[in-house]
Image (tube, rainbow, N blue to C red; front, side, top):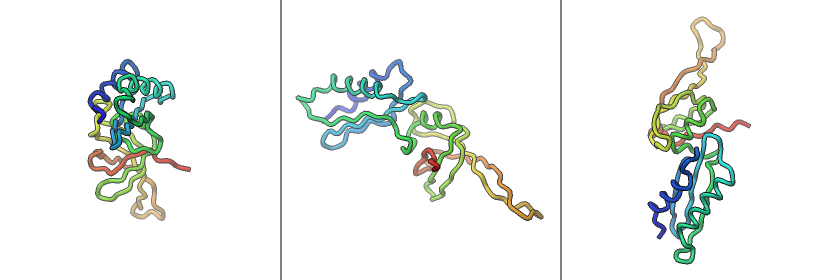
Length: 161
């Protein structure tokens, strides 16, 4: 079985001195390794190749066979760490809360913390139609909604086509 602590250290050493951060490292049954990274400026193929080479140098395929995938978080991926929230401030997001509410709005604020923190407090601004007393038509008003990532099933970039 692949040593996940050694794997995490190997990836951390490979990204040291860059703006890359780890979103997730998974070792699945059958030694299928998946490393997901991101960066405020994006991830290029050279960064993925550098991390792949570092892992291959640290783990001998002859001693232990494994499958390796190193990649960036896709645009449709759920946010898992604070860095993804920070990167998307000002962008439209879709949130599904644990109580079943689906919200679409603009990510306007993320509470301070470490870039790889998984427990994130954030605020989105949603548009609500409100009928003012005496008005013929409802008007759209913006309302800030404070949320915690722990209270959400998912938060992701809101794709509009």
